[in-house]
Amino acid sequence: MLKTIIQYILDLGPSVFLPILMIIIGLIVRMKPSKAISAALTLGVAFAGMSVILNFMFDQISPAAQAFVKATGLKLNALDLGWTPVAAIAWSWPYAFLMFPIQIIINLIMLAFKWTDCLNIDMWNVWNKVLTAVLVQGVTGSVTLGLVVGAIEVVLELKNADLLHNQIYELTKIPGISLPHALGLTAVILAPLNRLLDFIPGINRINLNSEALKEKLGIFGENHILGFIIGVLIAIFARYDLKHTLILGVSSAAALTLFPMAATLFITALLPISDAAAEFMKKRFPGRQFYIGLDWPFLAGQPSLWVTTILLVPVILLMAIILPGNIVLPFGGILNICLAATAVVVTGGNLLRMLILGIITTPLYMYVATYFAPMITNLAKQVKTIEIPAGQLITWNGMEAPEFRYVFSVAAKMFKGDILPGLPLLIGYALLYWWYFKYMLKKEKEAAERISATSQSL
Amino acid sequence: MGQRKKIVVACGSGVATSKSVAERVKELCKQRKIDVETLAVDFRSVKSHLKDADLFISIAPYDPTDYGVPVVSGIPFMTGIGMDKAMDEIEKILKNAK
Image (tube, rainbow over all chains, first blue to last red; front, top):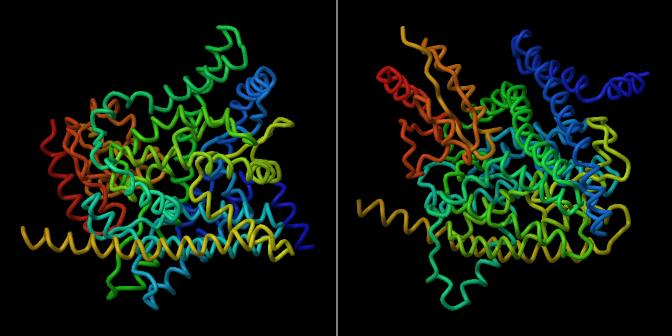
């Protein structure tokens, strides 16, 4: 009986069942009923709105993507949506809201035992862990394993905030904060690569002026311009005539401009709950010294971050064509912010190093997007967020922490009897992490000494 | 009684951080009876939104760029620490704005 009721509710689709869940949670955290209902309806509107834009996009871009495959012979049948639609799909996972208590409880325990100094109040990015859980469930078929890997990610993110704290202060001069965002986990890969660059003679003598480049390139980073260019490029490869090329360009520009607009509705809906959760956490530790974990955009004022994402656009497009086995057609995630935001911290904002790291790791992001495309597509189909045309896959190129998600998804398969390749991958990750941990502790100590030296000389 | 003031908040994609800061500032302005509209945008297109703005709340306050309007740090509205002081600053700037 209960099962039938639950199935009935799930069958209503996320634009109905999540608002119902939201009202219940809202009342539990003592929101006013009128506010809870308004927030819940906004959440439903966010899902419905995202569906409208996605369906528009599939109508316009899927035929072009198919023509692209036919004309070029390149099997790029997984359309990269970028993070905003993928966030919508992740939130529509029926167990998504469980990730709130998981993150909060782990953080409180780690603070209590002094295993971390980071109080993470960034409740929006709970969805990163939801996505990880979704992907692990997609690979292993187990919800429990998904939630467990999500919990491991919470621990690693908090440890990572500890390992980046002083270096972030040196870069941004904002006191009392750090970065527990999932994208920072990729520093495990970027820091050793950046260390290798130290051995290339003369690399530190090349100083590229990010600020001037940002002024020149800035316009290409705007959503509508970028969307138009990518749309036109796809159309040209698909051998469209001029009329249809221009139509596709404007449609692509519209999709990339409208995605963030629909995504802000999710924030409006979830804000009261995430505020309540953040308040709950802050109240628990009145005496304890800690710093606050924030979402990554406090790094967004670094000009090298934007210049890197824009200069990597042609690299990503080229790699999509030449990488063997790649099925990703770059689109919504064409600005690889997750890479650039981590690289800016690891290199201290050195543009040349960021570009080199970006070029080296572009295949990693792309192959992981290729690997997870069927799982993301399946979830979107199951929860009926969108109608995806047959034969079309969706994915996200440039997702945060691709190395972590891949290694731990494959490692989770060990519980299903597949020891290979999970075990060696996990051991490799652990060794890399061990080096990274020691290296970053040293860098943090050096940064702390520099910080206290400057504050004394003032 | 002044006319409605426009506050622009920018973050990485104009979605998460900027929207939450914008909503919070709007609510706090309402409590102080300051008539404002807030707009959440992404850093890449911020300049085109600042032309008729009275104030820019930056999530990256160390950024040395001259935006042509008064800039206030948005960090207090993210961490919840020092929000009153930041609001005093905002109120002062908006009162002086024509």
